[in-house]
Image 1: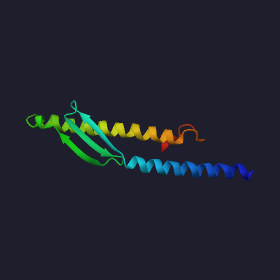
Image 2: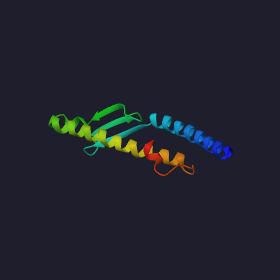
Image 3: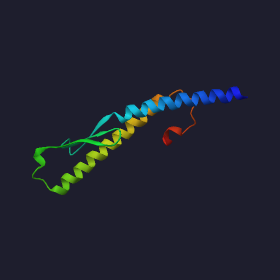
Length: 107
C-alpha cells in the first residue's frame, strides 16, 4: 500500500523540480510586444517587468493620447505573448507526466 503512495510522492517531487526550473527559465525571458505596425515596441521580462520602450520618432507630432494607447497596446501584446510562451513551456515540461487534467491552468 505504501509503495504506491511512495511512488506518487517521488513523481510529485520530480514534477515540482521540473516546474521550478521552467519557471526560472520563464523569468529570464524577454518578450517584445508591438503596436501601430511596430511604431511602438515594449520589451518585458518573464516577471512582467518592462525592460525597454521604443517609440518611433515619426510619432512625435502625433496626439499624445494615441501614443499612450499604442504603448498600452504594445505592453498588452507583450503580456499576451509571454503568457502563451509560459503556457507552452509548462505544457512541454509536463508532457508525459501523470498530472490531473487542468492542473497546468492552476500553476
